[in-house]
Image 1 (cartoon, each protein chain N blue to C red):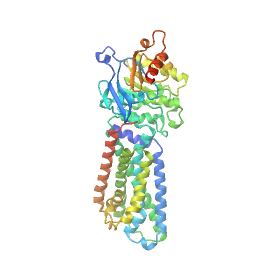
Image 2 (tube, chains in turn cyan, red):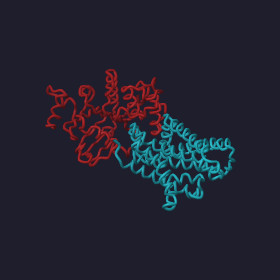
Image 3 (spheres, one colour):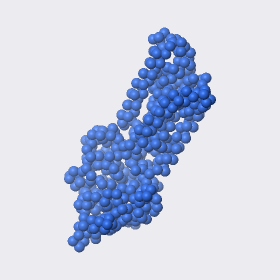
Image 4 (spheres, rainbow over the protein chains, first blue to last red):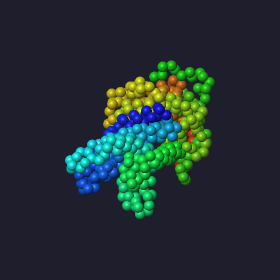
Length: 250
Length: 250
């Protein structure tokens, strides 16, 4: 298992895919944080919760998204390029390969979450300072944000691996993750919040945001959200492992 | 290449290396492999012949546990491939000529597999030199010619210094010098008491390299045996092959 993990870590490091994902993520974080930090009316950016959710929380949201993409690509890219064949020839016990991908994905995913959030904190603080809005976020809020975003992104990378293993096709898997987080949870479920009760706070994207303390009045408590998201991640990873073990490789 | 020669006198070494018994694979209505039975003797190069769609590649995938048989079984060294301990040190295989991530270097492709198989990195350099890719090892695979990719695939198959080599159409894309080199390599490999299974539809090439042939048509074995037995009485391998596959076709 450690041999497979070492192999997966080298796979992650030996192409430019992750560098590309990281650059794109930082670009989007900068765009989202500056747009919200400068465009929102100052009266909507007064409280700690507003500043966290509307401005620096974009680091968490995009960190989670890109960690999910990274996880999914770690398996769909192997299927797309055919390297899954030599991978399974060396390690025919396919659940070991999936487990190693989950572990490697979680490590890199946590890094993505941490980097995105730290970058958002820097950009967001600068935006607020430029506008003369007093920064209400204290050390404990930042700590929870950083640790929560890292944990949420790690778990979303595991979800990505599981989803990628089930879907197998790269493009649908990546579009599915983007559509879920940005469209379905971001818009559709968000609009339903309140209309059909509090169902949407149990969704995996909302749980990810809750871990870092965003929207405490609407979302789950961080510890509860962490457990819930871990359950989602475990379910996805097991589904991916079972699907990978059962299906033929073409 | 191997420091100490295999002990060919060992009784177990004379057991068939591969035994396929009533091997069958269906894809819905299509019967890709139909009750196929054959075995491979150690120290031989066996040509696996048949027209396109005869079931050659499917049989190799079943042999390597990339796909599961619908009925029957194929054992490698007395076990199913996925139950082998340390399969990379027993069996090396190349199924497709392009199972690489285009953005990864040739050396990193091999290092990833060596890590997963717990093979020392010094062996990566050995196989790179063996297939004469050491000068190109740092380049990304997308810059490789088809012949270089074939050789990189072969290098990956040889990482574990295996006793059985399984190659699907290995001569595709090789120039005449490359084909000559491969032929000599496979002969030397078999002379060390090791075993080669090589699928091909280039009969002229096969006739110069193999000791035994298994001819497949529509998933069934239509002939097998020593090359000299199948080609006696003034008949070439091509005559025999065309006669057998045409009879089935009509």
